[in-house]
Amino acid sequence: MIRALDPAGDRAAVSALLTEAQDYYHLWKGRAPGLEEVDDFFTGAPLPSDSAATLRLGLFVGDRLIGLAEVFFGFPTASDAYLGLMILAPDTRSNGHGARFLAQIEDRCRAAQATSLYLAVLQANPRGAAFWARMGFVPTGISRDDTEYGHTLHRLVKPL
Image (cartoon, rainbow, N blue to C red; front, side, top):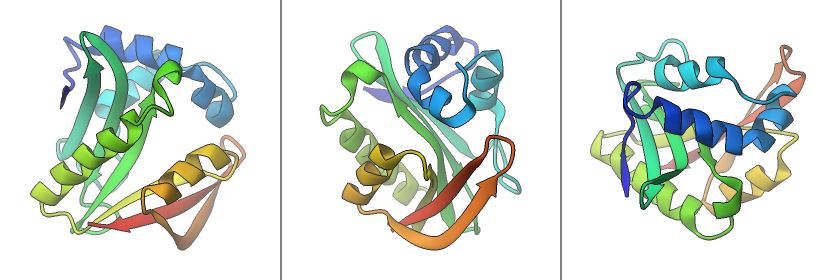
């Protein structure tokens, strides 16, 4: 089941999942996620996107939150959607959950009349880059250096 996540009712589950999936945070930030990352999941938005125009979705198997995603609308242009984060519990990866979750995200983006879905992938994450390529995302030719964490990020896009 996929449903919107609520900061009051789902905060503990999001925190637990981020802790469980800390391999990604160690790759990205060099440390385990904390309360800042939980808060950012529920309130963050890339400028100039509106935080209210955001999907914060959870993928559940039974009562267990195994995946989460945040999708912003209106970035980088008004007709676009931007997948800021999609993460799965490590023990559920490579089982088709990511592809099914992404398909539902794409359907919701189309329903919101987005014409393209963008995301950024860390150069240091070849497994993630391979997943996105299998899902039909292609490089835009735009990359940026994240001086805070010392990474290069590559922007990818998939027409909807």
